[in-house]
Image (cartoon, rainbow, N blue to C red; front, side, top):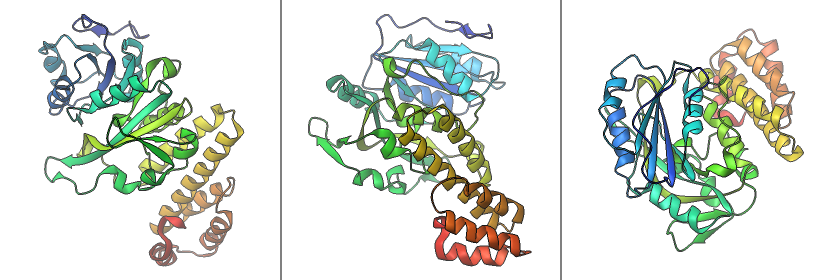
Length: 344
C-alpha cells in the first residue's frame, strides 16, 4: 500500500505466511539505536510476525541500516518527514497481522512479549486490549530503579480476576475507558499495547498532534473493548536527551490538545464527563506549574481555564484569586507546593 503523498518506497517483501502480529516502528534519525530495537523484535520467541519500519525522512544512516536487513519479516517504508503520528499511520495502512503492536526505534522488547500477549488474545476473544509493565534505562545510568507500575499503583488495585493459564495476567472488570481515562499519567503506554486489528482498524493517529498522539490513540482504544494486563516488564524504554523534557509545559499543553480532540469526538455522556474532568486536571496542573515558577500569567491562565471544567473548582478559584491579587506568586507557590503539590 502506498501512502497518500506518493513518496513511499517499500523495502523487502511480505512474509511468506500471514503474520499473527504486525509491529509498527516509526523512526527518525535514530541510527544509533534502531539496530538494537529491530533485533529485539526479530528475536521474539513468537516467530509469526512482521515488523514494519517507517523511516520518516531520516537524514542520518538509518536508510543504509534498513537496506542491509535480510530478515524477510522486516519491511521498510520511507516517507517524507511528517512526524511520528503520520509515520505510524503509514504502518497501520500496511499492516497485515491479526494483532497490532508498537515499538519506538529507541526502545526494546523483551523476548517473550509478543508470545505472551498473543497467547492471551487467542484464548480470550472478548479481550481487545492487553498491556504490561515496563522498565526504563539509559546508556549512562543503566536500568532505573522503578518500573512503570510503581508510578501508577492503582493498576494493581483495580477490580480484576487472575488468569491462571498465564501467570501474572489479570482481566480487568469494568469498562476500560472508565478505569484508565481519569489517570493523568498514561497507564498503558503504546509500547506495551497489543490490540486486535479488526477492532481498531477504522481509526488511526491524529497527525496534527506531536508528542500527545499516543495519548489520543490509547483513549480511542480504551473505548473499544475489555482490557487485561500482565504484571511483568516485557519492554524497556530508553531515556536520552531527545525524548526527555525539562519544562512541564512541553508536556501539559500537548496533553490538553489531545484531550480536547477526544472530548469533541466522544458522544457517550459518561465518557465526555471523564474527559472534561481530565481537562480540568490538566489546566490546574498548568496553573500550578506557572505558580511554582513565579510565572503569574501562566498561573492565571491555568487556573482560570480550569474553572470551565468539573472538579476542584473551589481550589482553582482560591489560587486564581491569589494570582490576581499578588504581584509575585513565587513565595506562595513554593509554600503551597510543599503542602499539596499537584493536589492543589
